[in-house]
Structures are given as structure tokens and as C-alpha cells.
Amino acid sequence: MNSIAARSVALPAILDLDALDGVRDTLLEAIEVGSVSVNAAGVERVSTNALFMLLSAAGSARRNQVGLEVVNPSRVMATAIERLGLGDQFEGTIGR
Image (tube, rainbow, N blue to C red; front, side):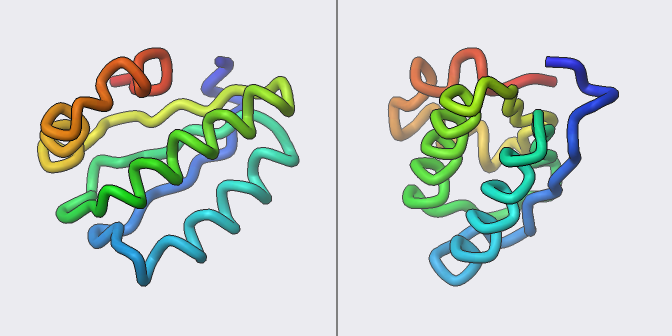
């Protein structure tokens, strides 16, 4: 993914059910324009549903033939992905 041309979206500190609708809408709008870089550095709490939403957004990006990369995942987010056994699903989506 060309990170220079990618639209940047920062995830909120609390990525729970209350935040999902807004984040989903923002990601879908960004994917319609082109590649997206999702900055996850500030995530302090993340729900399982939020992780599945990110995987769904990555699938939407692939269908639109654009890139979606989650960059700088916080330790909290990386731990949640690992504990839920979602590492394989996020492979190719998580960057540094």
C-alpha cells in the first residue's frame, strides 16, 4: 500500500460498541476514496466486535481494490488480537 497516498484514520482510545458506528462509517467513506492507513497507537480499550469490524473493513478494501493497513497497534490492541486468536486473520493488515 502506498502510505503517502493513503487516507489516515486514527482510532479512538476507547474502541467499544459505542464507537463502532462512527468508526465504521469513517472507514467505509475512506475506502470509497482509496487506500486507508488506520492508526491504532492510541487504543486503550478494544472490544471483540471492533476487531471484527476492522477485519470486515479490510475485506471491503480488498473488494474495492484498495489497501487498508492498521499501523502502530497499541499493546492493548495487539494483546487482544493475540488472545482472541485473530493473528492469522490480521496478517497482512497489521503494519508498524
